[in-house]
Image (cartoon, rainbow, N blue to C red; front, side, top):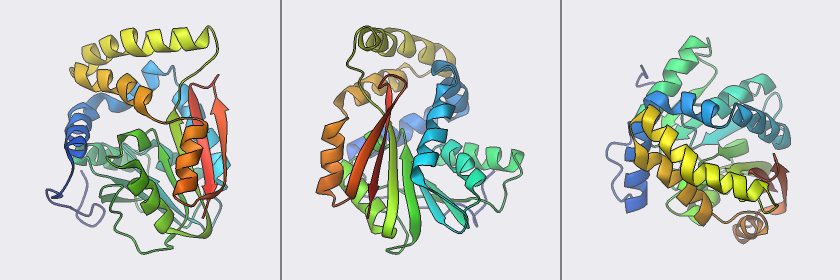
Length: 246
């Protein structure tokens, strides 16, 4: 279980908006089956996407890495392979962090990754603390996307890089049609059967549909003053990795 020296408690985190409360409760409720469903429902392709995101990040030895909305820690664990000097995972759902801590211990990564409970919109780090900040499949859950991205930029060093890995909306036939059929019909049914929480896996396609993707998301990054923004579509545009520089 997480210890007080690795997880910084935030109490009830007053001032959270309704979306924060809903998302936090939802992920706390499915944390026990989250990893299994992630890998099963994506046929393991999510692992490939995270590897691609880390490669785009340019993370290397001596760097400091921040994984925002880290969940159960898959991106932070992938980052270990680059041997950075520091890895910090941040999430506001305590049950997800408990699962992350258990996974970290099982993999013998105790001391390699720090875990902090906090929201993306209020990161408890000084300006310029990290060389790379990243978020994998969590940006669409930010209560305020601009505020979350702004915080990720604030804690970056000048010249540091942000990587945002997120689901996107394929536009080509027949991938588009198959994708939305799976997301709206198949995924919620399997998610409910395995996790016992049908709402969580109905929320997923809804949140993806509402999230700005492609050039729209690059424009959000530009508005937050990231430079040299670019994107790489993954697996026929089912997911996209976005990169920017402070």
